[in-house]
Length: 100
Image 1 (spheres, rainbow, N blue to C red):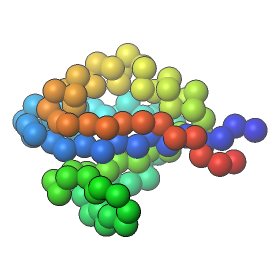
Image 2: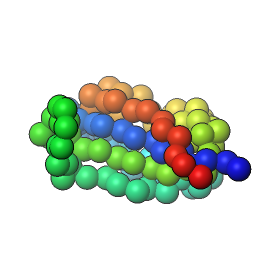
Image 3: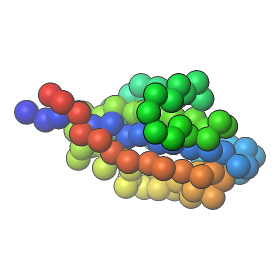
């Protein structure tokens, strides 16, 4: 049985204009891989440890498996826009395997 996987991104946008090409195309890149947005908000309530910066946003996407999530991340469509986010923002991104 495959476990779901979650892409988690903590992002602080430094250049909104440079980020726009990424924002315009990121959602469309999910379609072929069945990625589903779970959360995308700057309304973050810290409970333990250091909270993300006050102007940060946390994004969570759900995929059917770790393999599918990695295939999306490494896909030509996503890689074509990723550089915009990496240059326009401070980022922390990772995949977490879910429970069945």
